[in-house]
Amino acid sequence: MLKSRLLKLCLAGAAACVFMAGSVAYAEDTVGLITKTETNPFFVKMREGAEAKAKELGVKLIACAGKFDGDNDGQVACIENQISAGSKGFAIVPSDSKAIVPTIKKARDAGLKVIVLDTPLDPIDAADATFATDNRKAGQLIGQWAAGTLGDKAKDASIVFLDLATNQPTVDYLRDQGFMQGFGIDVKDPNKYGDEDDPRICTHEISQGDQEKGRTAMENALQKCPDVNLVYTINEPAAAGAWEALKGAGKADGSVLIVSIDGGCPGVKNVKAGVIGATSQQYPHKMASMALEAIATGKIPPNTQGLQFFDTGAQLITAKPVDGVPSISVDEGLKLCWG
Image (cartoon, rainbow, N blue to C red; front, side):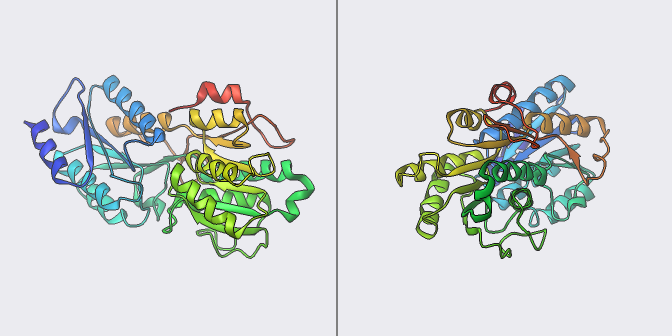
């Protein structure tokens, strides 16, 4: 049986697979979702969107994930499973924007449609389509908000960056550099961070988007940047870790602004609590739902005008709006949050 065959394939690989049965179980009516991990609330919400759409369309969904953020080998195994299953195609959030490209090419050469979610490939046109937050814009929003909130203090800011990974996947440098552009920092090379010469940048530390690693990264940063007054974080778990480190250092008194990106319910609640000053909300359920429908029907919507991908939207959430920076309230953000 197809399900037994797929189970053997998944168990043989480095990744975890989940089967969601629709009304039809033939291989040609199989579609996939591949995420970085199974447990991150962002990816959990993606899977919920994919499951709901698969049920609506009457197709079989194979949901698969790496063991950890950055597990390219696990995602390669996931794609091999999709090819072996005769899937129509899959949506993927790549852990490594460059390293996964040859395997995606193999899948496309085998006739599978591939839609990338959230983290564009490098190059972006290595997939059939990309559905994503405009991550540079999301970063710009929190950068503009931070500059407006600090006012005159912005010119003498001491900024700590809690980034994602040393290999700088697209989502990492797009958010980081978007923040810098919004804050008024010259980003130099637009495809990487770390080459800037703005004296306000104190350090870049790696958090892996994880709360505990974010705390450790912030503790390390405090050794280098005792006068920090602004912290950029790749996501809200890293922001929560940063706040814990600041609290431990006696700096959770509002003297240090934290900004982030995601819009998960825990993160929005942290905005309400004053832990995070502002966050840019994105919509993973929408990304996955749209991708599954496009793969199943073969109808891929055109890119958003002026962009190389379909923009699924981002909105700034804060309890302290800044003139000239569009935002929604915390209560509105809580109605739209996930996780």
